[in-house]
Length: 109
Image 1 (cartoon, rainbow, N blue to C red):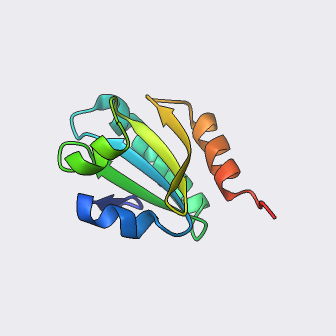
Image 2: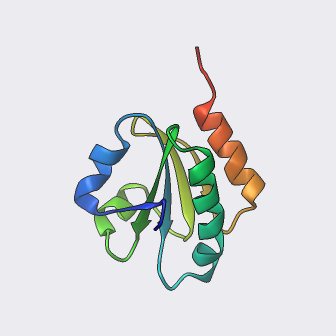
């Protein structure tokens, strides 16, 4: 079972408004998206309880895709309390994703 929860347009705000979330914007036909999914699945296990791992199919969620000006897939958004903290575009290295997650979960007190 996938650790990435698939969202629809009408669910996005409620699932990302509180806490930390990594949202992958992707398409089922996108080869680079399929290549980074196992990495995201592994990181979802490592960051369980700290970050919600969510997925948006750009073909099925035009409003959310347009809202964030997604032009290329995969695009990863790192959100804290509904606000975009960082963005990565393309099939980036696992290290870049890990650094984004560490920054997202860093204690800011």
